[in-house]
Length: 260
Image (cartoon, rainbow, N blue to C red; front, side, top):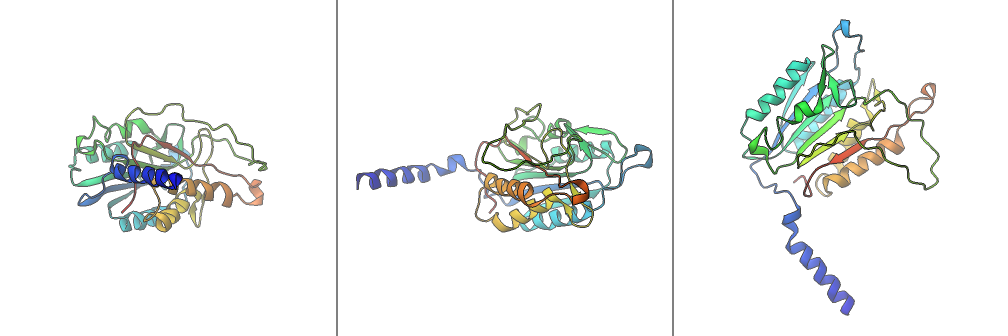
């Protein structure tokens, strides 16, 4: 009985101070969700059309709208236009919003993405607009970034599972600003896969898991299930020798995040 009492006491104590570890989400609005979908690049760039990305964009717009976000979806933006979009977000008043979401769909390399003009946009150039200094009305609120883009050209051949853990790779530079979540489609240095008919492995898995579990699981639990689905259920066609992909979730969140 002593064990039961102490166990109950611990549970009660945790529940009592639960709000300290959970983001407040009783704002009038969930927040703004900006989706930047880049499919076509200028011919001079030599970058190929991203067929299948419109499937991702449509599914993401539907998913985040259902979660209560005010969604802005834009297509085929130059590097300067992408920067301007985030600058505009920083000038808006987010006092009535509980969070902010930005989804980037493009070609990329480690540290950023490409605009339609082939110019490279560093991710930290975008996040500075919504960090503690850039946007005061988002201070202390979760800022979620979901990025579908390559981070290099390495290919993952996969490995036989024998229960051994692999040394994880971490991004070369992690921002110090609090309350950000960076959800990358792939690990540093690696390619990210996209089906030309059905959309990208990562974004389709993200939308599915948000639909299924957003009312019951904490965000990091949901993202772990996204990792699981991409890592275990997808591989490229035999012509590409069954390549794999491992998403990379970098959390600077300071509390638990639950979608209402």
